[in-house]
Amino acid sequence: MKTKALSVIAILLISGLAFQGCKQAPETKASSDKYRLVWTDDPTATITVAWNQIQADTNPVVMYGTKDHGRKFWKYEGSKTADRVLDKYDMHTHFAKLTGLTPGTAYYFVIKDDAGVSDRYWFRTAPDKPEPFTFVAGGDTKSSGKPLDAGRATNRIVSKLRPLFVLYAGDFCSGNGTDAGRWHLWLDDWQKYVTTSDGRMIPIVPVHGNHENGDQANLNYIFNAPYQQNDSSKIYYSLSFGGDFFHVITLNSSVGVNGEQRDWLENDLKKHRDFTFKIAAYHKPIWPHTTSKGEHPEEYNAWAQLFYDYGLDISIDGDTHLSKITYPLRPDSTAADSYMGYVRDDEKGTIFMGEGSWGAHPRPNDDDKPWTIKSASLNQIKWVHVMPEEGDLPDRLSIYTVISATYGEKDTLTVYDQEVEALTEVNLMDIPANINLLDYGEYGKVIRYPFILNEIESKVGEESFYGDGSGK
Ligand SMILES: [Fe+2]
Image (tube, rainbow, N blue to C red; front, top):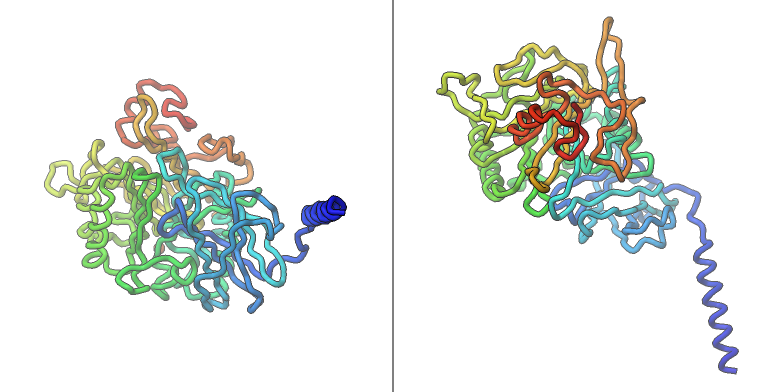
């Protein structure tokens, strides 16, 4: 009798499991859109999932975990509801911050509500020790016409490159950042074009630009971007990963760059001075490479010496709508070869690169300096390979300028995303076939940092000398 009862229980259990296994994910989609991921503090263990909830009161929740269960939401171990809900720009924005994540790990997720379940997406947390990775830096998109098309081509290239993150140096939409429709367009495009073919979403690290000046808190509304001094108009912050390998600083060229922000920067640089790589991004270039844009001595006065004193490796800017990269620079106004307060310093200087032509129509590059390596008038992003030391090779960066679009006679737009080979999760450090890389002249298509590596490489003349694609 007892045996029979046990058998019945076993059959019930097995059939229950079988039922569970056969259970189908609902066909209906969640009532939400404009999905995006944001890194704002510790990307090894946290990420912010943001979306627009279309239908209110439907109990939206992010279901996530390290195993891919597709849209079978009930199988994911983790669940998180929004920490913050915000009605702004005709969106019912939800921010859910996932915490306690494992570093360097793939996470799969869906957003579920009473209406249904989203597509399955995934992301990768940042490593907590030095590991090779790539990131993309760029900025300046527009909301219509050819600049919108060019920006979409750039988005599609980013999805093919699968960087660990995008550092976006400001100016998201045409206008002053208070037009709801333009934000809708930008966010829809970001989800549609930057997400990879297998649903990987690339986290964004957003930086405030002057086209967000209609409300200085715009990036807090859109990305939950952090701010300083308990003042949501002061959006600047930093984040680190890889142990003490990589530190990212975002600055704000639209609020006072001296005073509080300078003090914050000095304190942040001081705290992270021993990091292997330190990079900073802000929107307005100190000395732009076009004559039609104003110069920013106030930034030079507030930041230049700090960048040098604390060993900032790379400075990234936007705004001007062209491509530039400089030699490593040290502030010095008295040396005989000083120009605009800078001299070349291959050993300890900061490389300045930019200047923001993700989508916006390129301006003429008619203001080169003696310390400019290369400028160009075209649509582009910077793609940076970050490699930790191995064997005789030091910790190093390889900087590529990826051309996404150019204009010909009669302002004809040509885009370069279609033919670019899509990288996969197993060849993320490769150079994809048919990618259009800017030629820097004597250095070929890649600038190495520390800068001395360029000299060594030109003598050796070998491909893949530094362990990643050559680009030469
Ligand atoms: Fe700008």
